[in-house]
Image 1 (cartoon, rainbow, N blue to C red):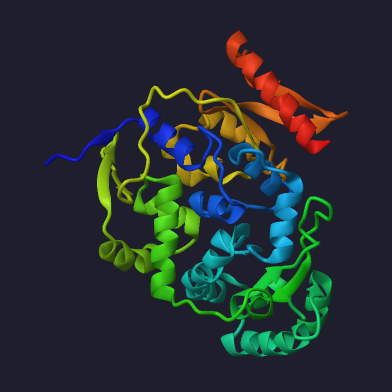
Image 2 (image 1 turned 180 degrees about the horizontal axis):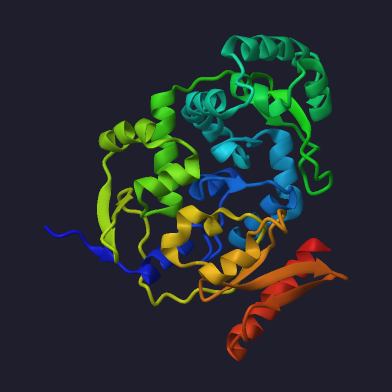
Length: 343
């Protein structure tokens, strides 16, 4: 039987539905994070804004409480970037990423470190973290290295109140075993879960897309994909797209309401190019070396239509092009709600 070909608009609506951007949902925060495969959180308010855009009646304090109660964990995960994930996804994701990240670190770091050296530094740091969380600069002073060098050999979390709306620099670290509990995951099951979460949140997708999002190479992923029961599609260029069973594939004409996204939102990164959520000429505006902080964006009809900022107690919109009147009215109403959320 010929594989079904999915148009770019179908892939766009699938992405929006799975990222909870077609319709806000009533879900506990950890379950929402599992649905969207976590939130990249390089800037602490990002997680709050992203959850506000996809969870009905979301309140700012709810995420801070979830971090404090440890039902949500903030740590360096996919692509060695800060993410928010649920407590129950944390250890499986770590198990999936640990060896690929160690392998990558030992290959690319110059001067090339020895694994034994990093293991000794991690052991020293682990003993000190039994007493209290440590700040980034303390870790560097103790180990003689950045926290990132030791990280793949010692699982660390970012401990609140750092990395919250109230205290935005996420530079306080604790040992994962102390904060989350004992590691009970293995790499095989962890990789399977990570792939299922990714496809459920961003699919249908290519193997290259999965690699780009997770930071895990094809040699690690191919055996996992062979074990999983997946469905297969093709995009308009004939590339194979993999997907989990029963994940949403909405009608391509499904209306997409205006939505606001934070900086570095994962829906806009290169792995999601297939969905057409951002025009390539606009990608160059959002992601460029002269603005490494990136820009928060807004969507109109499922595509990035401009950038925004919170200024003088209001949301200031900077559209790339003229927005149709009806869409502009909806966008302004959503902007007023976001301004109230900031206040």
